[in-house]
Image (cartoon, rainbow, N blue to C red; front, top):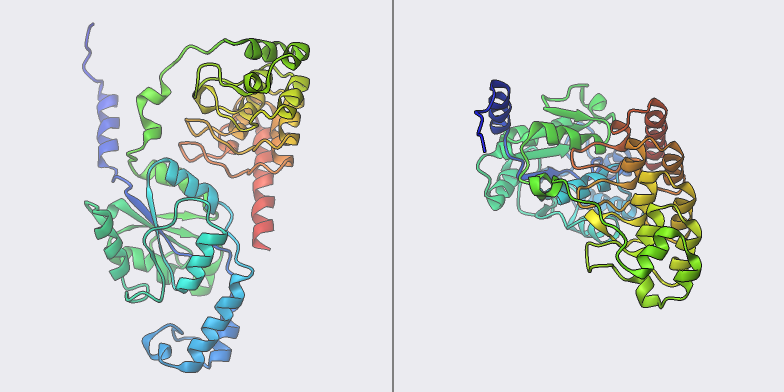
Length: 398
């Protein structure tokens, strides 16, 4: 085999990649960042008798019985309506898929952090999760963030990104520790003078942050392993049930046992009859298989579900049958490609519309941190997904 020296362009790309810091972890603020802000701080300060220009959590006010009681009462009330910020779940899933650690530093209490993890958070717990009840000084003192860097054994704090919605607290906190900083700009900076305080990354929703992190850092990620993206020969139906499903032969399927109708052809990683029926767009076969107890979300070749295959092919009747039968529209494959990405990339507008109408998240992120709106050449599809994103975000922030 003839070996060729790398071109100058290849050498330049390699050098650029090496100069990017490795992303070891992301540290989040909570209120206004991971959760929709729901506390009336003006009322809190009024009831506590604390001047608005002072920090209600400062040492002198922590010793004030009235101030402490008001803060605890209002925060406990706020837990009843606590909700995730749009894009938080998608960003968390993206970081977890890439093997990036996530932590929390918040001015909320331990009780609120526990409620958040139990009631709202579906990814791995944020660890460590440092609340105001911990011994560390409050933000923007960088001690807590530096402690996290030590726990993660980072080579440099540049390998950590601090994410928050407050330029004065969160961005200053990150910069004081030497970390990269990302500002979630939902308007709070306007009440803090209008500046970003030098945040390197600025986004209007959390889902936008993934692509910026992907472009700004190196990732030691299993999703970037070349072997995962190597070309492989596509499978063919290998069992009687798979062949019948691929052909849409409901009579043949009806003659088989439930075990055979649900089985993967060659064990885990191979296709189920349901996936074959979806691949070829046979809605009646899908309905029969689901009635027989087939797993609607079973993952087959390359981790694709039946929904992914139907969306990729634009088989809307099959997709409708799957979603009616309880299939999850937001299960990615091994490469972190979602059904919505497949439908958008393959220019299947009816499949895109159906997935969005049935509750699919318009903010799901592929391995590069792109939503499906950035993964299509069709302007109409792009506009539809972006409109769905805007509606999704607006509903969450009401």
